[in-house]
Length: 526
Image (cartoon, rainbow, N blue to C red):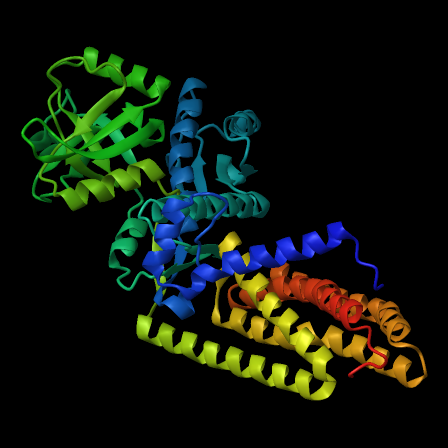
């Protein structure tokens, strides 16, 4: 165990040096660390530890996904399919297909054709359960399994869209994760005013391009009723202004591939957009065949712009103009780039952690860490003398390695994470305690210093590996199944276990080997 090949010495030196290099930026001003990153933009040099919400301050939001509205929207869209299928088969019905509860219900006039209609419905709505009642009544609904699958997909899509929207605001290290069956937990370190983020999240950002009706006027629709296939939509800027639009969507927001805040020819804020290939072709054809008509741009059920088509718009790009401010065009471009939410979000819980409270947590964590480190250092020197001092040197490298890994990986450090670091300080010397006690026993048994050290390491190594491995497995389980503070604690604990194993077995042993070979002691100072 006292034989140390050159390559192993080099590895220990390199690893410890890297730990110090990556940990060093945490002890300088943030501006200095950023200048290092700019000057050396390689391998994460100059990165500081990313602080969590409880240390940096910021906002905490818990939002609920309105999955029921997705089910209702799918039922509404299926009604058109049901009506068209019945019409094509020349089947009369009364009452007509309508949504009742979580099902589409209708009754056919000829109950003798119920089996035929059931077959048609299963073909037209293959993902729905078709139930045939008495007198030709029908009920189409989603099974419990299909409903759960739809809600799960909705939640996962919502998380992805929320992540895209928040990432584009420049918020660093946001925590966005699923909580339960219909909620999303959002933590935004450094954001002390969550109102702008809430506005981004509340907007569904479902954009469509629809033509104004050419068969009826708004006045006729208001007095006689809205004709089939048309709808009245208010203006976003002025609810008093209304438009009678065709329900048929010419191009949807899903065809957008880019949107940017810009200025129009009058130097007024605007949003430029670009479609994909298929969307651009539809847009060009629609504008070419409808010159002179109003082409409404509808966002979340409100008309945000209704320009008149002057000429065909080719190339798959265009511009949204209106009475926008620069902030509104920036937010709108973010929403359009990120995509539409599949369901509305409702903020059900909101908390703000002030930077002062976060600084208090940092100060308390620093005090606990320093106090724990000092007590451990003092104990090792008092209990094991010179060998304890060598273990303390290794402990310093252990702290540097933990900070270095956290800085390099940009893992978020939370208050429970600091607790994990403090715990690691004790575990880091635990291995040395086992080794030193074995060495002491071997020396008391009459072995020479070299043999005592060699036997101490050989006989303690198995116990050390077993103890640390079982703790590492427990921390890994906490990381996989835990969330929030639990996960932060487990991350630092796993990093600390790995680094303490390295420093106890490799660094301390190397220091002891160097001391033994230089001094060649007749007895051990332990």
